[in-house]
Length: 162
Image 1 (cartoon, one colour):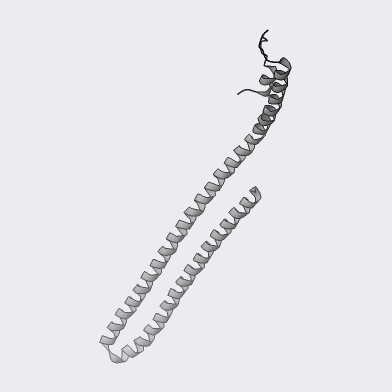
Image 2 (cartoon, helix red, strand yellow; image 1 turned 135 degrees about the vertical axis):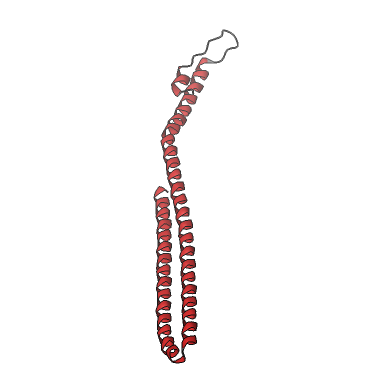
């Protein structure tokens, strides 16, 4: 790359006839040198900023990838928790129904007593199911809060960089 000093030190051979006016050439070279020097300094000053911006861009891309991975993991985990809770609920209902059928077959009197116990167990199992469902809702809310806070963090970082 030609430096401003190269332009300033450039010498032309002088011709006797039909040559350029030396003063005009020197004056023009001075103007070119000044303009080129200003551009050269500006370019040198902007290079670190470009490197800094590229590093920031890379950092933001990493944050974005992390957030995307976190979101996918959160969605996957939420779906898994939901499926497990549903399976548990179905198993609880199935177990309760099977137990109720056995008791009813054995005796009407003991069935009435057992029905009350089963209803209590069903209520307990429903309570357990509701507890699992609440835990899922809490987990989901925490994940949403995490994602929102991460998004706000990125927005703040973007505002600081502007």
